[in-house]
Length: 221
Ligand code: ADP
Ligand code: MG
Image 1 (cartoon, rainbow, N blue to C red):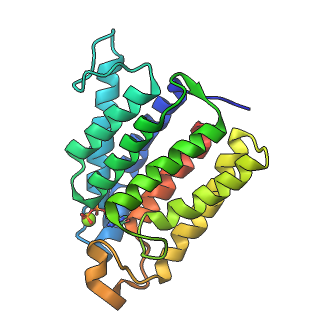
Image 2: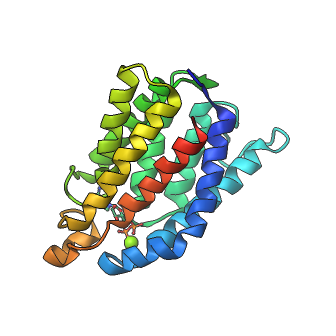
């Protein structure tokens, strides 16, 4: 099975910084329909800070602001978490910060991992989002992308799929889950204040999570 290495994870995080910068207007537009028009701005700010922090910690052995070294998964993910909590703001800052914190705490192999291990880390991260936000599938949040994606990844992993196959299966279900948020009524977060009027719009967090999984499927395979 193809291994997920530290370099691949860094490439994924750098790609997210580009992707959220490119999709800043789109995500903000989605959030202007059912929220407060800041989701793209939040993620662009957060992931560009993540990029800067990783570059700082990777340059000539100088440790990052968080005092972490860049060559283990747990310290890399912990740095991502702390940076997002500090810089993103909004509901998504706390939720994504928790996602990466739980991942950093669940790491078993520090240098490389296989696809199965990656899925189990994503599961831990998403458990953190559920605990923190008290949302469930169907509430029109990022969980409507992540939970179907995790089920598909789990199925592909247990039937012996390669890392690439696991992630591709996850992406397919993530896209379906994201699209399904359009017809949902929001029950959690800012969009829930709109009640029925939240119906007919994609959830911004579901879309940004799908972009995260898409990048993972292209880079971590
Ligand atoms: P805010 O809503 O504080 O302005 P953002 O706009 O950055 O924060 O993020 C909004 C996204 O956060 C929503 O589209 C939704 O996917 C996600 N979200 C909000 N509340 C929750 C929650 N309780 N659980 C999971 N996701 C949530
Ligand atoms: Mg918002």
